[in-house]
Length: 455
Ligand code: NAP
Image 1 (cartoon, helix red, strand yellow):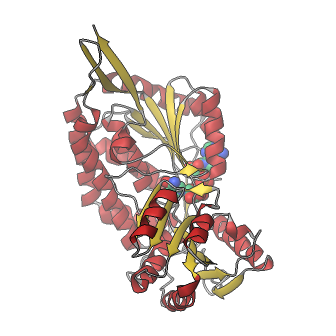
Image 2 (cartoon, protein in one colour):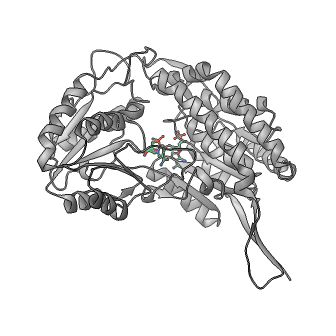
Image 3 (cartoon, rainbow, N blue to C red):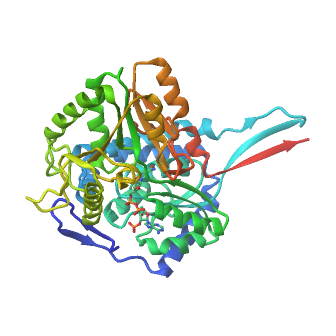
């Protein structure tokens, strides 16, 4: 894939970039490695000052960065600006909390003194997706830099200007040269970077094939990886649910980021008793959605990020229809304008064996399944290769406990949509990946958890 900004709203090629040569990549890895040897001893208070300044820059220039996000991947501008603000918040969180998260942990044993110390690993490679081009990077970089690691970013090829802007934020914030660098390279260069002895670990947020490929190389070289991959999150609605709230949240949860979020609700598993009501209201709210130019303040759904994503999504919808699924609303690209727009779609009556049962649909398409009772709802939710997040709606305490206990996923949100929160660990199980970002757990992924015994 060429490294370029292509406006998803118009299809216009805005700017293209030359990929780094092998020699340039080597130079940047060397710069990162030699920086690490000094940066690891920079006091935590200094790192925190730089990270707080990065937050200041993000907050001050939120509009400019928001416009860049919208230009490159098409999300509505207000959501893009909110993403920049959230990126600032993760910098502030780790700037304030890292000292506590990284403090020695004394443990009573037979030793005179024994404790755990957290130390950085070195150069960490981050392979990142375009869907939250700022947030995904900052939620890796903030804890990694606070822990004393240095970062190399291989961003998605369709958001090069965001990638460059992020490196500039860290440089302007005061981080020394080499502490955080963007590598403008294609996916074909990832293997070579992971294989390099100076690179100690890697994290990838993206699709399953990309994650599997990176993990295979890292495994061969015995290197730690964190994988944040796809999801087909269930959104379960039981008869006791507050239906108004559930429907409103269902639309927001499915349409987050124009439908292109790993934790967007994708499979709506609804109890028979309220399914007709739920669907009627869902359709009503779908009809009111404003699809269009992401720069307009009233727009709720922008274009999909690339023509390829539009094509893949439409292919999945058409295959599902051929396999017997019914279209309640939508079901095709928006043809009356340029850009990668897809009509908000609801598929129902999804038969056994249909791809909509198991595939991730990365766009504004809701997949609806009716179930007779809670047992079937839980079984349906768990019948998925993925296990990222789950949202479940019920006022019944016994049902709530069973959902929390029995749903196979990295998180369960009761009567709320799945979201990331800087204070809470985020990550998946099954084919959604492994490892955690955010919270206390996130900063402990790329550290040596060193055991100390003093006799
Ligand atoms: P993608 O195609 O896997 O791309 C993600 C990143 O991986 C890009 O930088 C891409 O580079 C790179 N890449 C692609 N193939 C690779 C390979 N074989 N080896 C190494 N790197 C490779 O994913 P996407 O379509 O951009 O993102 C959508 C997916 O990400 C969805 O499945 C979504 O659910 C998932 N996601 C997960 C989370 C989470 O936290 N769990 C968050 C956001 C998104 P190029 O752009 O150069 O190809």
